[in-house]
Image (cartoon, rainbow, N blue to C red; front, side):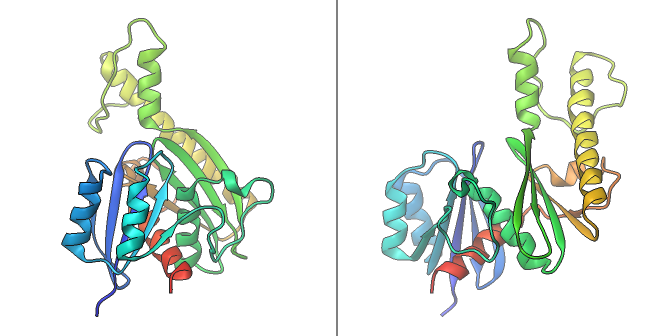
Length: 243
């Protein structure tokens, strides 16, 4: 019987579910909601044997019992067994999504210094060294937050939707905002990568998140693009915790 695993990634912006057949990622679904009917439809459609949930929001609590009833289920949190060590201090404050990202990096590139730059509601910089120690990183506002902030904290600037067709020198308010926000983010990311390169040798940089393809073209530093990195990490953690 083929092992089918559902990997749920519930972030601040979107609810997503990746479907794995054995260890191969088959597809990624964006869910409209996490209501009982939605979860039931996934169970009936894919007949999963395993499942894992990474959530940084207040999700439907019923889905955990539904998944546990029909699959070998694991909820990712700071008590999960993972193949990397986490920072001292308050491991319970580490976002589940960040744990999945560093586990993926350490699993795919063992014995390397890995910096995972994740593009989402926030930009997170996640560093796991060659000894599989997740040392932490940094957090800064993502693109949507920057666009909203310009609109909400000024009197006249409009709310601009992201668009990758813009010039360096903006010719109106909209293109000025796009140039400043997107190219500003690209230079920030490049600068952060350079700082890590100065401190850590033989550094892999993995860029992930929904806008990976677009940002990669604006970066000068070499990166490994992998928009699906978090799902690979969730699958690895599921395998590590569910027998």
